[in-house]
Image 1 (cartoon, each protein chain N blue to C red):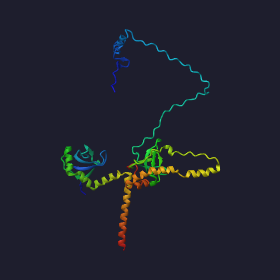
Image 2 (image 1 turned 45 degrees about the horizontal axis):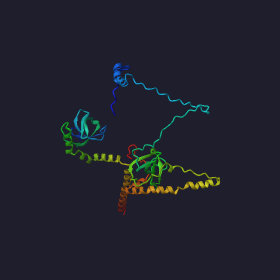
Image 3 (image 1 turned 45 degrees about the vertical axis):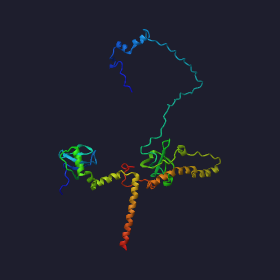
Image 4 (image 1 turned 120 degrees about the horizontal axis):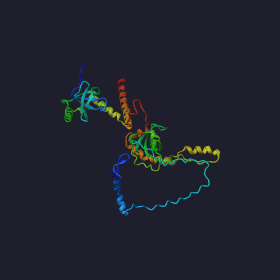
Length: 228
Length: 134
């Protein structure tokens, strides 16, 4: 960028400029402008003010003045991932029914939640969403280049809307049947994601056993001193 | 009962408090009753209180306040690093550092190895017990 241009009339003291009126006249080049215009300072024709459109009074308006809420144009971004959490990292889940489980991180969804999988065969954790706050990122990484996770998003994990059934007697029985089983499609998705992962796990010795075991604090371990 | 490690010029010591914690330094001059001038190949020569030093068995042959080059040469000649890493104190520190830097996966593998070793030991012990019993 060009350095700041020097002020034409620097202020020596508040209200007192360095250059006198006559010198300023010369500095601003008003003499040159006048010369160009033939002795007089150029005058522009007055612009006609834009015609004022008379607004019609509305027929109906609310009895009370209702306050309009301030506009909010904020667009939330997905949470910033910690440096230790990258696709393929082994994570330790800290809360919920899978607490202590070591799990593979696949990708971050648009809501900011992390998409993880056990793999299911190894530790019983299915394709699942997890919040970054309830997770420890270890420094162990698994190769997930062979895994395709593009089809999973937050909608996939949303609650399925149940069709309302008319007829009360059938209501309870039918509901029970529908809720218990996981649709075959989801089971296939799980298998599709896990297959290349399991192969990658086999290549590192003890990694499968590691993922199958739960993490716990033992005597002598100090979490603030542990390197994960 | 007599003292064996003296705070003298050329004595190698371990810093046990402060910014340079864990560094091996050489006492290069004595300032007064409490302080020494201390130097090491990877630090600026500075004064330090004796209370912050733990003297080691290693001593090198230098003149009072040698130039950095001379100090480094003397340390190489006496093989301070080698002697330190072979000494039991030095080895213990190395092991401590390694244990502290273990990753969660490393700790898991360590646990498996311990269990395996214990299993082997127990088998051998059982064999020996059988022999003495019979």
